[in-house]
Length: 357
Image 1 (cartoon, rainbow, N blue to C red):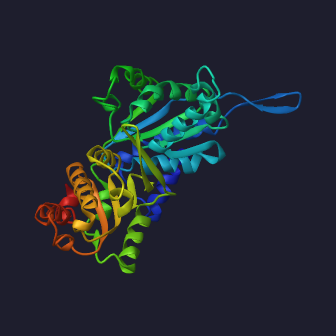
Image 2: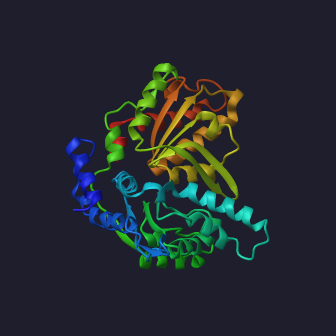
């Protein structure tokens, strides 16, 4: 029995995890990767121990519906086998870092900026865990295949989670034909596993929970903090999305759950495409400090309505602190009548039935 399996069973025994047969089928592959990344051979030359470049080890592409435990399993691998030579990061944040480093490398007039950047980012790295792989930005689509091949050729084992099967990545994207070799690379260099658990643990965790708190006072903040901490399985990090060359930053993100304040998302000049990207990237959104709406903040009101529409259509779970009940957020101003539809959606998104759909 491997290390990851042992750790999983210990968590089940302690009550931290629920035993899940579908998750259990993934454990042998995680054990395989754990054993590989911990057994880098070495040789002795003139009394010095030198590390060999590790032989290629197939990574894992773990995909399936939201809330099935993909991130939890990957995090367990990282915790058990990672050590100083492992890195765990959200895919969007990783690609943002890659693009930033490429930008700096190009200033040096290097012929191919990708080669030194990949070498620097793979130095000392044996296991790279990427959460929630999805491609929506053409800049990422054009370089991700070559970049991953460079990492794997350097001995880095890539383990990633995704809500999409490989063939559906960057579906209908611009110049998608140029992206298809990356899909083939995934299929040939990663073990593609579908996690088919019938349980959505992320939604189940919220079943029966209050998710809309008003007024937005200290009591509401404490309630949201408790829910946020319940979702966290490790540290949170900012999520940066690229939409048509613009950057959208959500201050805190972990395991598909995003947390932001109202001004972060609705006081910025965002449009429908930006909110669609957010709804596509997160499965739960916590939005705090929703104010009253009136003619004085009409732009913010329109953005909030667009955000809620995007979340509603994508079936994103919504947790909020607000000045008042949905029906009382806007009672005057030119958009009060139109806001009734948004209030109705906010009310529906609080229901137990919404959680189960």
